[in-house]
Length: 93
Image (cartoon, rainbow, N blue to C red; front, top):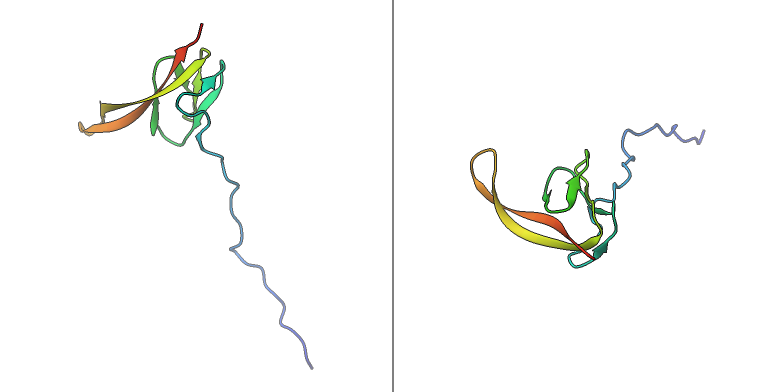
């Protein structure tokens, strides 16, 4: 008798949906009030002037203006200095 063995189910073959992380408004771009600047996991980018951090580490604006990225050395918990990126918004009149 010609027959095929029953195909079993597999544990593999599933993947989570992408979370669309990253920079949403680049350096020099215009941001409205409440615009999301960066979606991230952890604090790779830190909030500067006129920028707040949400509970999921999302950075968003509190005033309309031009986005500015700057580099700064911050002291970490292990007492080492590390170069980090600060995101600020310069208000527009």
